[in-house]
Image (cartoon, rainbow, N blue to C red; front, side, top):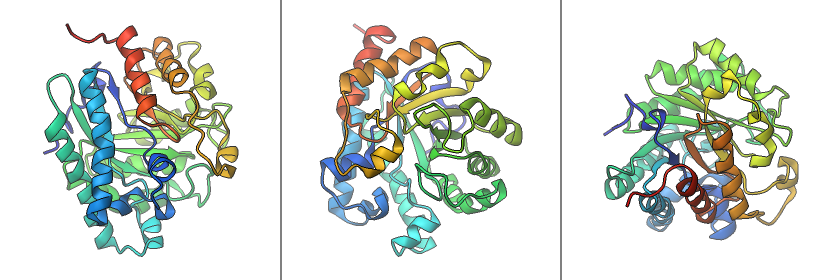
Length: 320
């Protein structure tokens, strides 16, 4: 059942982790073929399904060990109509696979959740176009129509919320928010940032958040930053400002490279997990509103464990 849909625990002060970069782990570390970078494709076969289960269990075990909450995203970043069509999937097939992705995470929650480790299931939405480059730009209404099918499917499932990751322009964020509100689903909007801390379209994060909030009557339950290294956005939190309260999550890239450089790279840059964990958790010291910390491209369980260790030493020591 959707345990937390009416009251998300990451909004109540408890600290949560997320997983790492699902697709980069599967492709670069496990040498799996993901057509169009679509992790949901693994749901079709028992072997692929087991790979996903194993991946998610790794992070559930970390959360349980360090007595932290856990937000798990379904492997459906590419499971919307345009991307699904590239894999030959009909709307009915996509609906079935989106449902199946939620059921997978329900199994993980049933096995690992306890009173100290609450597990929030989030339906993961990706952009209609490229996650790094603002292509195929839509109006807010077009974006609402495009994403509505996947969001409607999640609304009929047991997700607690939906999260839109790697968004790189404001109108798509507005459209997704409006669709989620229509279906009474809590929604997190997560923007991709460039090395200067701005969106690829040039807006500052503050401008983007203010625009989405204005057009949706503060529709998102919170915002996140993802697909950028902590050093790329640390300066945004140097001075406390009112809009910081809307940013409650960070999912950082392992690499300090720009998106253009990452696009050209044929090998995975996994950075320095220890430095990554210290730098990401250090941002929580600058912005106490942050309650969800995790990884994006190039990160894996090592990076997330370093987040856990830094959280344990600075904010949430293990109970004795």
